[in-house]
Image 1 (cartoon, rainbow, N blue to C red):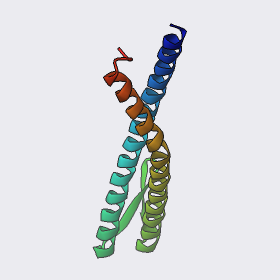
Image 2: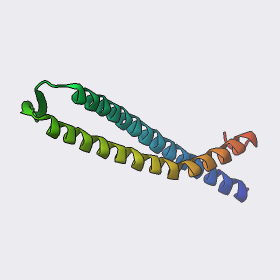
Image 3: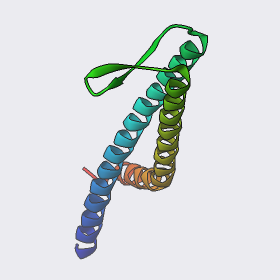
Length: 118
């Protein structure tokens, strides 16, 4: 009986840890997707900037300020590199969390099949 209680407590702890990891993975994945979309938008802006011969403006707070093509291109490049670096960091976090998540999922599935978790 004491072993059953210990197993039940351990299963509850594993379930809570699994749910926490699941939330973290979802958050990391969502952030990564948003950053990837921003990188793609910046790439499109860089392509349009390369084709443009018109006056370039950029936002500074609530204002639009005239700028030159070189500065605008450098700004876009810096933002793209920053976002790509953040995507890399999120991918590393995801890679670190995934094995523990899979291990917990497998253990919980096994417990379900054996009827230990209700």
